[in-house]
Image (tube, rainbow, N blue to C red; front, top):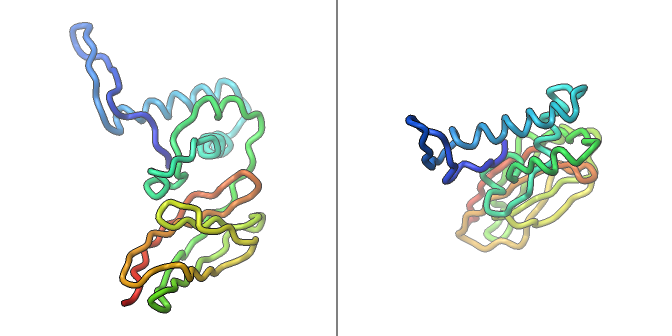
Length: 173
């Protein structure tokens, strides 16, 4: 999923008037409209290719990194200007974290991709590290005792990123 404009959107109301509204009812038409433009520009693409185009072309934004699977906001311009869209790497699964000591967290996951170049691991919305391909564990030794951390994991293939998976881990005292 992704973010789309949904705040203070000007919309029509009865008696030929306009008003501003907020929420998913205002954001959904932006996504549908962007996909309609993409289908018109790339009429031979399948729905899966259009979906990848939509997810690949988002603007990555730190404040929403842990709130959406893509970590980004709709960008129709990017979606229409890119002529080829890479296949997104498979999203990792079984993402888990465990506080192994008061100052370390061990993260594990299942590698579902066979073509990734590595994994990006974010901690509290900041890129912590990028691993090599086929890695399924990472130890974070830069944590403090008695704190909760949010980790995000994405498989990476060139510039393409999988959807995010999220885990929160509380360190021991």
